[in-house]
Amino acid sequence: MDRYDRQKRVAVIGKTGQESLQRATILIAGVGALGSYATEQLARAGVGKLILIDPDTVSLTNLQRQALFTEKDATKQKLKVEAAADHLHRINATTVIDCYPTPLSADQLENLTFDLALDCLDNYQARDLLNRAAVRFNFDFIFASCAGTFGNVMAISPQVGPCLNCLFPNINDLKKNDCDLIGVNTALVPMVSAIQTSLAIKYLVAPREIAFNQLITVDNWQLSQTNFQISKSANCPVCQNKHPTLPQVKNQQLRLLCGSQTYTATLRTKLDLPKMINFAQKGNCLKMAFKHFLKLSWQNHEISWFPNGKVLLYAVASSQEAEMLFNRFDQAITQFNHERQATQP
Image (cartoon, rainbow, N blue to C red; front, side, top):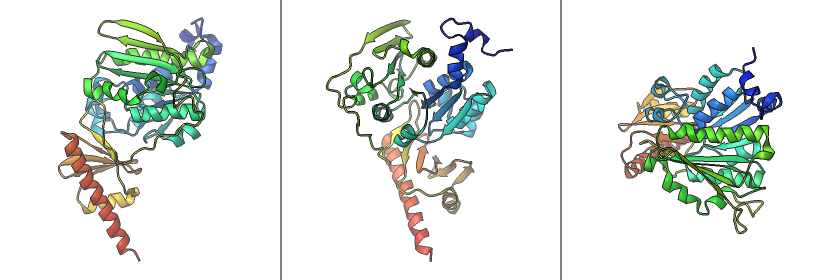
């Protein structure tokens, strides 16, 4: 029995189109609301390989708007990429899943091999990086965003049409529509993801039919859709420059994760896993040790630590409290490392 029989019967896809899907590799930046739906749809559609990039863990607040994940994943606070991979393997064992539990980086976008990228990100700094990298490293991606009851989707090929900066000349304006500020309707996410995934499948099967100048906007409260024609800006500082600078991630910059009371930042001092376990045991703050991260209970707060120096601070009431908590934790790690080095011969 052919599992893709019904898809092959679609005239615009057919046997040849299905074979194109099975040969393809798609990079998915962000495995949260949009990314979790996209990964499932693409695996079911038979895409050969998915590269998942997301540093975060599953939390209870994710379950309102994110696919694949379960209460068990949230209780265990599993890495999103690993939880997604576990579920995807049960859906389609033939799809290869590569997991990167790290923030999106320029190195990944330069060195990983893929046919198309999906922008399923939840912060404007990472979107800016993806857009600039697409110009510099010559790849196409499909932008999608959703907040409140509104969603946007656009296929972007900076070498052919407008880039994301042409669409949003001040890309920081995307911050105004973050779902942590205005929330997100549960039913909006699969609607927007379906459009993004439809474009991805069309790109792989019939790339010449993709309109790289069309912004699709939807409102799932009014049940309306509007398409806009976007022009390439002759003065765009990004896509008119074939080698745009890539933004440097500010390691210690605190960021509130979408739709939660969880903050993320990166420590000044990076310790390997055994040294960090030693720190946690000395401070009597180790809750659980996992393959790729540690769960700590530190000064009445739960913290996840990752070997790349990234930390997640959970259930923090305000940005001021998060900054104070992070600074104290960062100082404690730095002091521990200095003391450890001082005792070495």
